Image 1 (cartoon, rainbow, N blue to C red):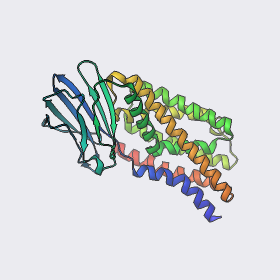
Image 2 (image 1 turned 180 degrees about the vertical axis):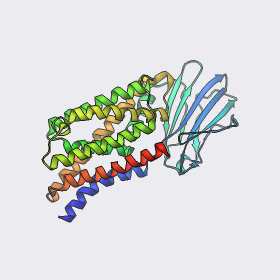
Image 3 (image 1 turned 135 degrees about the vertical axis):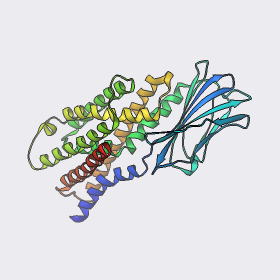
Image 4 (image 1 turned 90 degrees about the vertical axis):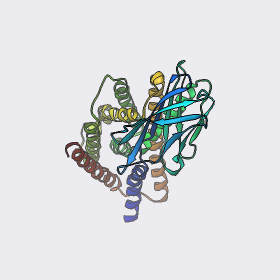
Length: 329
């Protein structure tokens, strides 16, 4: 019995914990052409433990990169500004991020040229260089922001905990599909509204309320196991929609930190959201497959769902107090 309980708890709690261990925001490089063979650059580097990551952009030998004085620290990023001059145009040349292979950081790159051409790339530690193409490609935006959306949800331990808590109050496939759809529609609405500037809320209260939403759904899951029905257990899709509006603001905050290509905001927004959905579906599928595999090995104890709800509730309660402390102290 104890072994079965440990297996259930390990699945419910270790999966998000492992994701949190690799969670870090990507670096961001914005390159704007201001004259022939002349560019201005903004370079945002995430900090960890108060230390700035030792990564920097590098170009072909024909370019000269000059750092401007006065870097700025904003919300866990250090912002540098550069001027870039070359003896040729940037398209057709290679951009790389030095030392990126020594980190776990991704780097989003946006390039805006005077003729309206724009490019978006996502560089990773194992693929830290790119040749800037001569012609624009919408596919690059689709690929980049789909991956960023999927990465964000799979590394967003609080969002995954909310989805897992919802699954504990849902009974049957039809209601699960309805609940997931309601959550998707809701966070898509606020993600779009916040990204486009129609709704603004400061991140600390939003993150605190997201943690509180997880705690409340976990408590409802416990009440369900004790035979007490409520709105969350009768109509979980209503709760998913209501709290999904809140989680959409959290996604929007992450997207604003990542950065958007100004000429492709609708496309980037759409595929970031699609990436979030793909990641969410992958997580739910993983839970269902794992539980099915566990049941084939040995029957799960009746107390496993309640134990999982207590585990998620305990973690979310810690997040609530941690984030409240960050807001006021």
